[in-house]
Image 1 (cartoon, helix red, strand yellow):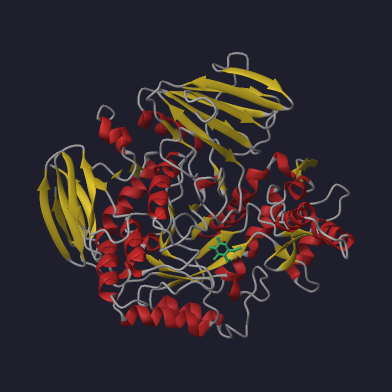
Image 2 (cartoon, helix red, strand yellow):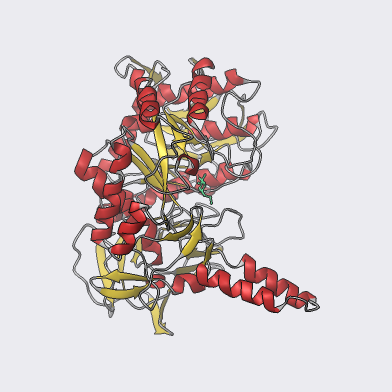
Length: 632
Ligand code: MIG
């Protein structure tokens, strides 16, 4: 059962696809109060009750014991002490109750942080819808919630192939070299990414013709080899006279504004940019149409970045900071003044004052950015997605975004942003998968091998062994870090063994994915969904159920030859490596299982079986009919 409660006049987010009549706020079943322009509600939790939800967020599958913040943030250091990542996925559930807050500004979630058995939710505004779902099981709550928000995006089949990225493959030769190196190493590959350096001065919808003189030729050559090139698009549009995208945006008044009606100007990679007001349908149509520049050249996949939006500095913020610095010129700085000055400069990026100085236009009215902050990235996704669907139909174009809000799950996927080459981030990715699925984001994954920092071959391999199961399977790393393509290390064979497993599993994974989208189901479930009465399964956050036949349990520690795994029932332990399959029957309970670096561990339930095809170097070359069955 779904009930809808409304306060004020909510800004339309298009997150929901079902019409649910509103009951106003009077009957809202949680204790609540309004004050200081905020709405605060709370509920008690049983001592051992699990609280699920919040999608892409730090910490555990069970969200208890921390403060979370729905406020899309470009924060590249994903440690436990943070509160917000790039997304705002405002769905939470406990017991028989699911709660979805349809609201585009900040929300704070104190989930047993201040008081162990109490959740306090602060909505920073007084215009919103809250949907309250009642069902008997967590899965039933999720399914009903997902029917409320509509079917999840399904990418083309090739987007399930292995993908290689790096910031940046600077020129055509670098791209060709990646493809050639994978081919020479006999490691399957379907996509190579173009990060910001393919553009001319970081201008969206341009190509740097010095670095990529025959871009069209490069795309076609790759395509003939069944490789898709996937360029990045950033939210900001570089301010440059003579650059048509900028001039059109400016002349038509399509950029976000300051209070006085002039364009808000922020600094990001391209230098000073205008931020398209993606919340306006005509701006979405305009920006979406721009992708044609690349689709006309044969491009059929994109990733949208920097759309929280990330702002390194605003013109005004930088000017103020420089004035402060000038005033301190020649002054004997005490520690206080020194740290203050440092903070002024450190605080330039993603500064709340800048966001608060930005305005959108909604139905002809000026709306402050802070009131709709979390809708920005989702609206950029929508700009692109609406164009792709109109132009090419469904399942043709790969698209995923860094920032997201529920609703965007219908038009694109997400990646989990700038993680680190840390062992802890294997588990962090694992924990986000079921939570993101609950919120409708099925096509997702983390930067395998880790984005920031230097990786090691064993970390990349263990990360990949989880990535074998994530819909987006992409190795990506930051500028200046150690190269981590699969052919960079001595033990190339190990990498081939792991990635071949992905291709063998593709018929299974893709059909599971399509079904999960059609049936509003999860791809990944916490063990507690399936074994609610098993105390060990309930607490397990290092393993996941996958579909109705399997359980996954990646190795996530360095120098480990395996791991301890908990089997909530008798299962068949399978080690997949290249085309080799080693099976062992294991009984319910705790086991230490050995897993070599070139092996992918998988647990298949008794009586279940999954199809495996022969591997191939590309998804397009797979024979999807010739499958053998892996019996549990
Ligand atoms: O400020 O385009 O998350 O994947 O490689 C960094 C460069 C901008 C952030 C993305 C990352 C990408 C990088 N971008």
